[in-house]
Amino acid sequence: MKRHAGGSRAAGVVKGIYIALILLFLYLPIFTLVVLSFNKSKSMSVWTGFTLDWYGKMFSNSQIMEAIWNTFSIAVVAAVISTVIGTLACIGIMAMRKRGQSVLLALNNIPLLNADIVIGISLMMTFLVFGISLSWGTVLLSHVTFCIPYVILSVLPKFKQLTPNAYEAALDLGATPGYAFRKVVLPDVSPGIFSGFLLAFTMSVDDFVITHFTRGAGINTISTLIYSQVKVGIRPTLFALSTIIFVVVFVILVISNFLTGKKESER
Image (cartoon, rainbow, N blue to C red; front, side, top):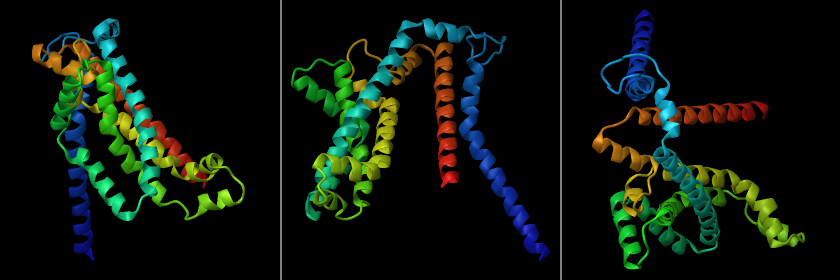
């Protein structure tokens, strides 16, 4: 019994150290970035005092503000469009036969498995061949293109979980097709639609490679701006920007987990 207890205690210590090392590896770079955003010096190796100047300069920098606007405006619009198209595609897929569904899903998985650089170059060449100038719009179209497969993967399982013949039963009871879809189908698939929207939004904000190949001159997102700054030297204003993004995401996750836990406790 003592040996068993000692072994369990030792295993618990090892697990604790292992988890601590993983958390340290993941969050130490972020913590370092946050600290550097308050460093009065431009150097990353010398601490000369606390300051908020870099945050003020970040908000007064038109290039950074434009990159933030481009990033989130493209992400929101692309997520909305890809969610609508992906949901409609799921409705069409569910109306197909099994063989047709398998073929279409296989085609849908190709962009997910394909390298981003291949998709980015392909989209860029397509725009150039058709004489479409690279701009904000081409980045938007590109993001919609690669976000749709992710939306389909999120929404389709919810359609497959629907109660069989519930939609037809609503029609038999006198409901119009639109009313039956809104009241019977949509409430059950809405969690998948919301997940698809969030996934598309996240993928759009996070993308660099495809954006890099399909953006026009003077069009920057946060990722492409940071890439261009790295080549000439990272400025502390980018540390401030990264810190704000991290804090916003962290707050959203905390609120989301709190609301989810509250709903589960009320059930």
